[in-house]
Structures are given as C-alpha cells and as structure tokens.
Length: 616
Image 1 (cartoon, rainbow, N blue to C red):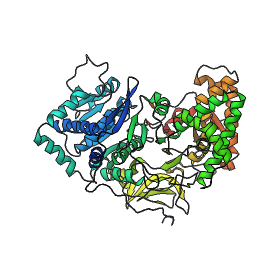
Image 2 (cartoon, helix red, strand yellow; image 1 turned 180 degrees about the horizontal axis):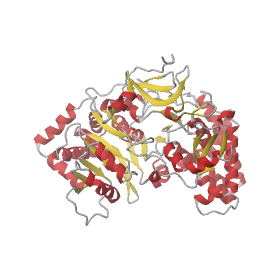
Image 3 (tube, helix red, strand yellow; image 1 turned 180 degrees about the vertical axis):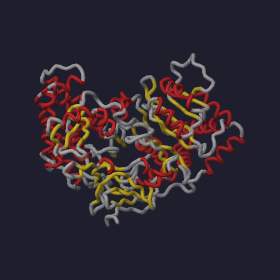
Image 4 (cartoon, rainbow, N blue to C red; image 1 turned 90 degrees about the vertical axis):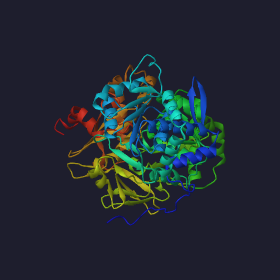
C-alpha cells in the first residue's frame, strides 16, 4: 500500500539517432562543437581553454593507452584527483575503452584509497600529484591487482623513479602511438560502437555515513537519461558555463561536469583549488551554478559580515534594498510584475552585490545534496538569485525532483523530473522509478535487493507529496528515533531549524530513548568571530570561542528562538558547543561534508552524558 498521489512525467527527450552511451553522445557533441571551448582552467594566472576536438582526441589517447595495457570491457580503472581537465578527460577515455570509472575522493586517507582500489578491482589508477601518489604507494602492498599508476602533475617528482609509475604526457603518448595502427584504431571504434545503454559506466562510491562506502553501479542509460530529463522546464544551452568545484567523485558534480556537457556542449571551468572557489566564481561568472548549502551559507556570510562593518547609511540602504528584492522574488514566483521600488533597489544596490559574488550572469541556480535553511533562500532571493532546490541521490544518478519553471513552491524540493515517478510508501519512505535508477551495488547483492524492489528504488529518505506532486523531505528513515515518552523524532527537521542561524554551522540532535532532546552545536566560525570582535571578546582559536560565556549565551538565544517554533516534545532542552570543527580526517564528516552522526555521538559521548546527568 502506498499514498495515492504519484508524481509522474513519461515523455522522453530525443537524443541523436543511434546514440546509446555517454561515450557516443560525447563524441557526437565534440564533432558538432569542434573548435569551440569545452574545458577551461587557470595556468600561471591565465584562463586557458581546451577545445571539444582536443578534449575528444585526448580522451581517445587515454582509451588507447588503457587498451594497450589490456583493459577489458567492463573492467574498472580508478581516478584520484581534485577537479581539473585531466580528470574528465581520463573519465571519458576510460568509458570510451568500454571500461568503468571508479572515482576516489581526493580527500580520502590512504586506507580509503586502498578500499576503493581493492573493492573496484582496479588494475590502473590515474592520480593527481605527489600527495596522492604517496597514498597509493603506502598501500600498494595490499593491492596485488594494481599494475600501473599514472600521475597527472609531475611537479616535485622529477627525481622519482618507479617501474609502476609514469606521467600524464607519457601516458597520452602511449595511447597516441598505439592508435597509429589502423587495427588498433578499429579496436577502439569497435569498443565504442558495441557499448550498450545497460552496460556499466561508473562506480560511484557513497559517502559512507554508516560504514564502508558502497559502490553504486550506474549505467550509460542512467547518465544519458538523467542528462536529458533535467532540461524539460529548465533549459540548458551550449552557450552556458559552469564552475566545477564540488568533488567529481560525487554524482552531482559528475553530471554537471561530464554528463551534461556531453549532451549540451557547454563550457566547464575548473577552480584552481578548493581554497579559491569564491575568487574563481567572481572570475568565471557562470550561467549555471549548483552548490551545496554550506557554499551558499559561506557566500551569504561574506556579504553579511561585510555589511556589519559598513557605515550606517550603507547598512540602511542594504536592508531596504534586500527587503525590496524579496518582494521582487515573491512577485516573480507569483507571476506578478515587480514594483517600481523593487526595480530601483535592484539597479541601485542588488545588481552590484550579485556582481561582487560572481552571480550576475547566473540564470539557472540550484541547491541540493542537503536541506538549505529558509533564511539562506530568502537572502539570495532578496538579491535576485532565485535558488531552486532539487532532490536526488547517487543511486538515482542525482536526478529525481527539481523546482521546474515558474512559479515553484518554496519549502519543497520540486516535482518529479521528466520520465521519473515518485511515490510515498506507508512508512513515509520515498520510492523512485525511472531510467535514472542504478543497476545495483558492486559486490553487494543483499543490499541491492533491499534497495531495489519491484523496479522501485527505496531511497531511505522520508517525505510527503502534495496534490501538485511537490515533494517535501522530512528526514532519513534510519535517523528517526523514539524518545522515552514514545515520540517519533526526525532529527533533520530540528537540526535544519538550528542551522538556519547564521551563528550555527551544524547541529546533531540527541534524544533516542531519552526524556528530552539535546543538541551538539558546531559554531559558524566566521560569523561568531565577527560577532565576538565587534564586542571586544578576546579569543585566538575556535576552541576559545566555544568557552566564552557570552558565546554560550548567544547560542542559547538562537536555540530558544527555534524552540518557539516547535512543539513541546520537539524542543531542545540543553546543548553543548563542540570544542572543535568537524573534520573528515577525524571521521566526523564524509567527503561531501555529510555529518556522521554515530561517529560524533561516540566521540562526544561524555558531553552527551553530561547533558542527561544531574538527576534530570
């Protein structure tokens, strides 16, 4: 039994005749786009472009080198690097050779690298630099199948010699030389032509919030379909540009930087490093921009902090203009003409703020991967940046729902994308069906059978559908707990309310089998530091901030504000501020910055017990 409301759209978008795989789609687009820029990266302070034909030629060289080493159809090869052109070139080359790309998060420690290389049975790994090479060399003794290591950036390795290791340009030359033979070229063409839509294309390793990552197997059909269904009411054009900065090991960035451009032919710009995202955003000024909530929060914080330091006249102008901007956003969402005051505010103030952020050209802007606070949405809508929300997961090729066209309903994650069905099971779990649904988990038949049932993907998320098919996410099924009073609590709902505060970066709700709810709080260091400095509160480190009584009182006020919006059983009675920020290397968060709840509760069990002691 399920809810009767079903969100569905069964129309498929056409693709070039005879195209079944992402490789075939990529080649067709490369031939169509020719000398137009496909990829852009910064070198010695200057942005340099790589044409579509060069992109294809280098991908063919990768495929040729792998085939010369004996890569078999359906065999995996791994990539371990930050975002850069060589990453996507290697990815396309592996798929051209009928291989399966196993992507490894660049932030993984050596044991995490070892796990993916071993689990994926990869004989070849293409990695970024000496830092990543050190990780592989540390664990290669436990990787008997590993044969070749390709290093993209040889900086600092000029005197290093190892029979297993070679460098990117030499690797490409091996492929080019091998393809000089007509017979070898025919072998590659046969690999490309014989690949079918249901063949595996990628192993995407999940973030591992509850244990070892699972290798989700995505087919070419999943990727081609997902790249097409997005553009039904949110069209994408070859004139668009994106900024590639989220991990390419994550399915959403993979779609934006590999699958979508393979279909639409737009330009992908790569950030210099994770530390230069805001600077590169201002330089590139993309027209299509996707970010996770933490990035949106950081952008908002940069403006808000700057305005608290401005003079009174500028602060008043800013507050007036953003209020008029929110009115303009509401008018657009309700299909009304904006007021004259809103137009004046946009021209006089808001447009320059958008330019300062690098969002003045953006026309399709999306937040996903985690819930975003309503206050953050309101802020950007006030600037004229109409963030849409979407919902998806690795197992569904990142595609399920999105706010489509105008108007769209805030507080939801939109409606089912074209060709995807969604329904809600009796226990509230979100079920998904469509060509976006993955093949299963590599080497894990049991979990595959639990996740795929009668053609439906069991998402593990809980939510509701309204009569118009708008989906609202209320939490993760496995995270729901029951208090001592028998109240079912979805912690994400309350945590997201707490994180709406500009002073709170993260919150972990506690209360399973307890008499009342408590929370572990992680400060937003930038906002709290600025607040402390403005009040001449002395501190030198994040840990110092957490100890000041004034800061504790500040957070107490934020918690009380949230409690006023909650039922009595949902209110947070006590909290503790964690003495340090969450870090992946400590096992606190995944590479995609998802909080590992069980790990944090174990690490800070003493703080939790303290909140429930003293006879309460």
